[in-house]
Image 1 (cartoon, helix red, strand yellow):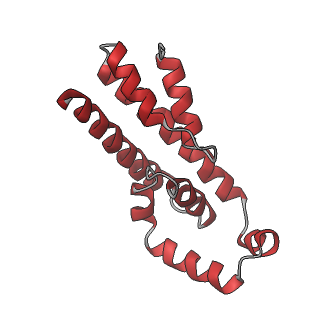
Image 2 (cartoon, one colour; image 1 turned 60 degrees about the vertical axis):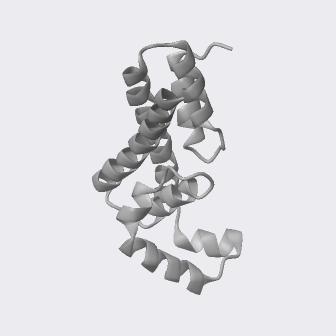
Length: 141
């Protein structure tokens, strides 16, 4: 199966939105087929970061009272988590790359209106380090 750079980036973008899709496997497969590893690292990082910012944007459009009304989440819990996340926004942004919870982190960052540029920097850094780790693992194997 051949993975093009465009399909690698599309998969990375989709994988960072609210739709689960494992972009790491696509990167590893791409690395086995092509030699432009630095280009792949940059492209997949950018695409995955943009996907997370799509989720961030959805959160920014949302309102806390929607969580209470539509998802039946206790308002005290929502306010508690909102307060906790606002103090830990940088850490959350750095760990948006984590499987399962990363998309939730991006959504929450949008809900709490975390600084757009600061969030972009830390989200991109976390994603770059994750993909760099995969690239280094590839070179070791």
